[in-house]
Length: 307
Image (cartoon, rainbow, N blue to C red; front, top):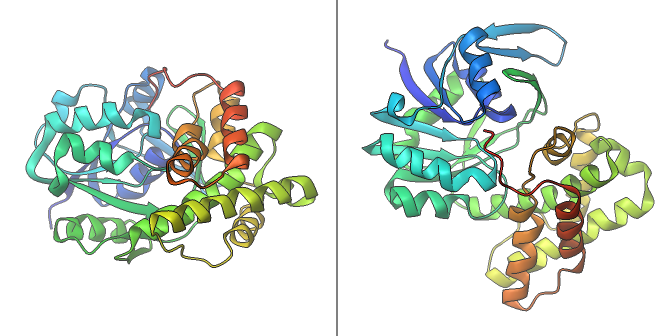
């Protein structure tokens, strides 16, 4: 059976993780604009460090030129949310008419930006619960393991099968908006606080004031979702966020990783999006709004081109 080509847009932690897992089963190309990341992948592939400390290099193609990705049929979008508009423009130039780009990104608004550039038929939404930490260009440590949820969209079936062959737990769910908001509540509760305090996820649990803020951020998110008519996947999102922080105790959140390497964060697509949607719907979101501004004060603006 011939190996299916797949394009991954991005060269960060999640892009490298998915690239490494898929490489034994598909012809993987990573498209990014981070020069060090692209160069490292071209020279040595993805170096993946597993949870037990073992490591292995997986050969992949890497480029910063969308023209080298012509006739792409299947694409995974794994850039930061502030890079989605550029990724959408790149994909518009290389995705075939009956192709599909699947976003597994954090935050709100990514699907809409892809649909604007590609059309609704060529953009699809997914939610993943796996995690990864970028240790350096082309070097990634596998993090939390969990399901990846997709809609039962015919164009996604071959891509879903590729992910299963690569070892990902793929599940079908027709209410992905619910899962997006459920993940958003967890991200809003954990990511900004770990970034501001400079601590791994689990250390939040030892700080009563942090726990209170986590619960409030998650509950505000649920209130905004309810005002939008979205059913949350869990009745107690604050408790779920605390459980996730405990289960991923040693993990460094993606937002903390961004702060540590001097990169822009996804705070606008997480707490910022919650605050603005809450304002539009008349739902108060004081904790999310404060976290949004605090992280913006701490982080670089979203102007650097690193994927």
